[in-house]
Length: 547
Image 1 (tube, rainbow, N blue to C red):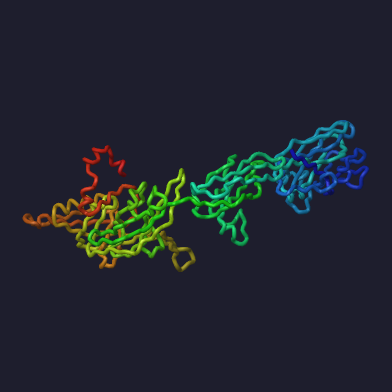
Image 2: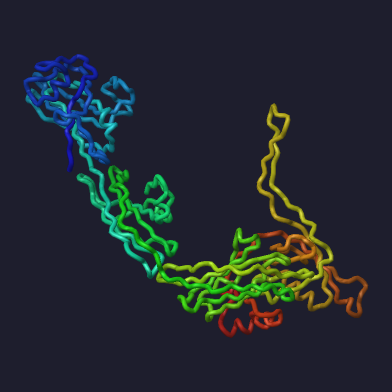
């Protein structure tokens, strides 16, 4: 326990009190002498400033916070019995003029009621929790009020402050070169300040060497590679990451003890630099080739066999000169087979120049270690037909004959308000929706009609128009309630099989990759590989498993 006893340093107000044996109220009540005192009648009030430790002004140690505050006095009743009320306050007004009855307002932080007899008595109140700073200590005022039946004499006044010194943190690790993971374990010790307590909070920030080299670096505010934010608990170690590989770092940690429910933080502390240099898989090449007849791009990704094996392969596509990238559906693979992966991208736009990138990932314990991205050359596929694609089972996709182009609308939620006194309306609106419209597809055979209706049962389809039409290359659409028009008066020959479908649609966002994807090799191969009821029954898979 760290206790500082503060004494009066100045007289603020005197009402009905007299001084004996000293030059002032504050001098009489801080000199440790029973020959000097102040005497007050019933209802008498006085107030003194408080900030003396013995004979010197008390200064809190750097970073310390107060825990409790307690008023005390040495006093007696003049002839029989009386009662003395003590109050310690931090008045808001700069001149610290007493307010009401000994600062009975929101600035009052501690009180004590002392019963007195004719014998000198050391009385005190109970410690009151109070977290104060040096500036707040400088503003304390102690008030004394006689509220009993007899006059009193006050020989000494005290305010006891229990405070806690600032804790410190010692960072123990990591250090050296980390080669088994891109996640690292931070370790530290919390050392309570004198009068403080155990660790209750902690926070860590990790900086690269480049970040620490920025002018004006401050571990509390500078941009960091990783920031845990404030965490609650007594942990002395924390695994963080993954961190970018092949980079040098330094970790900074601070811990806090709890003072009256408030975090009392240590300064930020650090240890030596450490380097993350875990071996990662390397992609040797990415080859992309547009295949016009199959309406897709063929991808070949080759691993560098001299490097680490890959546990995961990620392939992404860009159609805006590598400004943005999206994952290729079905091309995020766990345990990719062998050292060469061949796959297909069915969602690259018709007539759109695209590029691809791929990287291997090693799974080390609970962390993932990604290699560098390898980028392909640009490629394109182009066709003068329209295609309606099934994203989950591309084998179901079909070319279609569009007899009516989409005539879309693009709705927007809006409201208009006329404000009194204004000659123009105020418009409030949300962002504009995607397209809503309809188009017409014609089929020539019963089989084409069946194939189309199978497609229209899917929740989301990809409509790709001919490249020469110079329209939106990709539309993800949700087909609505369609109308099938049968031929009129045609009951013989091929014409009897013709159908027209009027299909309303809503443009939707690109669906997420749900892991259900059977690409096949050619249109015919894909049809052969499509999941059948027989295959499902054979391996016990259900449609719920597939979705």
